[in-house]
Every structure is written in structure tokens, then in C-alpha cells.
Image (cartoon, rainbow, N blue to C red; front, side):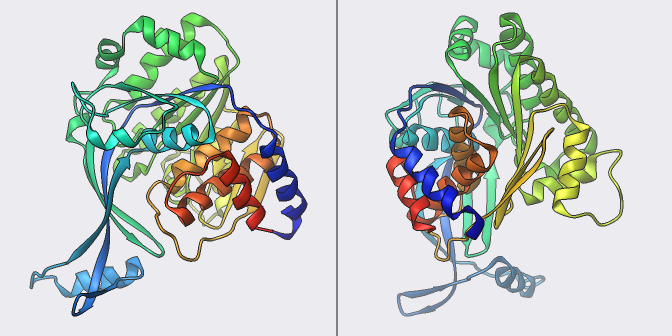
Length: 366
């Protein structure tokens, strides 16, 4: 981070002078997340947890053909889903947020009572359920997404109303559509939003942010179709697609023109970017982040949190921090630093930072 020290200090100072007065629209999922640590051994009532996924995996292998019990320790039950967690992060920063998702219907699920006051809820269906096993080196998420099976564009229109959708869209400076993978009709929703809300209102210089989530369960054809839908938004504003390291590998492999030889993460990202028609491809591995635009690539080294309080939602907080810098028209390097700062503060403290706390976390890097 040596080359970014001066920029970090300047960026932290910039945040002290900011007044956030913009609205954003984020959709379309929602979960109730139960976060667990996995117990490896016990000494009386003292728990010793599996520290990493590989050691837990080795233990599971020993149970093949024998069966066995795995004991869990519940950390918390919290707001879950890409849209709600990103909404919570942007609400904490200071944005007015329209969160459109599966938050409980006809009654909002009590877990979403913890939403930041800046968030307006527009619920579409009941939430999914996720059990996340957290380790020092990552997380395993087991989800029941059955409540999403009937959620399509027609249901979105019925639950929110076309006139209200148009009002929210026109009021929003950024529109984020996330969790394509777990919503069976996500492509239908994204296309419906484009055809019936975005296009009729013409180019508005909007900012559109997309996040696929882990596409390993999708076919190559479906992945390529999603990339085409995302590119179609370019006529109506700036478009950014965000991917983590695993997602980058999967999307790269799904492309018909993907080279079969071993490629670096940056090389794979460039192939994806060249396949699409978007303003920016944003990649956030755990130890760095980089972005590709028509002007080239910008890369910033990150800082790993040594003792994370939470891992589930780190990527969504990264997206929120990046969106903050984007909406403030900051330089690309500053946007990446804000993304990693927002994610790092969330992982370190167990909650999304407000603007002041984000500035303090950036200064702590120095």
C-alpha cells in the first residue's frame, strides 16, 4: 500500500467534507442469514473451531461411508442477500435507498427491522434462508432459495406497481441489480426493467451496477446471455459489472472465445471486458482489486483483515464503497480504495461503517 499512502490520507480527508444527498435503487433478492462457526473439538464447554475450509473438508472426507455429526455454534441471525446487505451498507454511508427484494410477504420478516432508517422497503416475496459456515479463509453458504421460484418481472410489477417503479427509477442516481444466479427469473427481471422502465424514459445518464453472484450452477449459454443483457443497458448510462475471483474464472470459462491456456486473473478479466459493451469491469479478489475500462487497467493492493468478525457480505460492502466513489465522481483508484475500505471495516467490525467510520478505517491503513 506504500504507493497509495498519500491517496489514502487525501481520500479520508475528502470523506469528512462530503454530504450525501443521492438516492439509489437496489434489487432483487433477500435472505435470512444464520451465521455459524464449525466446532472441531470441545474441552468442557470451551469450543475449538475449524480455522479453515480445507481442514473442515478433510474432516468431512473421513465421514464418508460412516456418517457423523458436525456441531455448529450460532454467531447471529441477520439480514442476508446481496441486495439487502448492499442496501444496508449504502444506507449507513448516508444514501437514501430503495431496497426492492424478497423481504417477506405480505408481512416484512422481523430480521429486516434492523434495516438502516435510510432504507425504504419494497418487498416482493418471502426471503430465502441461508446457513453460512464461516472460517478464517472463507465461508460455505447453504441456501434454500425456493421462495424465489415464482419471482419474475410480472410479479415485480404487481407488487411494486409500474408507476412506482418509474418514480423510483427516475429518482435514483444508481440502479444495482444483483444476485442473478439465485433468482431463477433474474434475466427476465433485468430485461423487463430495461424494456419497460429504462428504455421508455430514454438516456438519463444513470449508473447501472450488476453483480452475478457465484455462477457455477448456470450453463455457459445462460452466463453469456446475462452478459448480453448487462451490455444492453449501456445506451442508457454507465454500466459496471462486479466479479470476485471465483466468478471471474467461471465467466471466463463460459466465453466461447476464451483461451484454453492458463491465464492470469487480469488476462481473464480483459477477455470478459472485451466481450461486453460496458464502461467498467470491476474485479475484487481477497488481496487486491482492479478495474478495466477503455482507458486501461487500474489496480490497488488491499489489506487482509487478520481477525475477521464477519465474512458473509464483504463483497456487497465492497460494492457499496465502490458505488460511493462512483457517485461522488472520484477517480477509479479512489473508488477501489473506498470499496476495499468499506469491505474491510465491515469484516473487521462486524457491521457496515458510516461515512466517518469509513474515513477512520482508511486512516488506520496508514
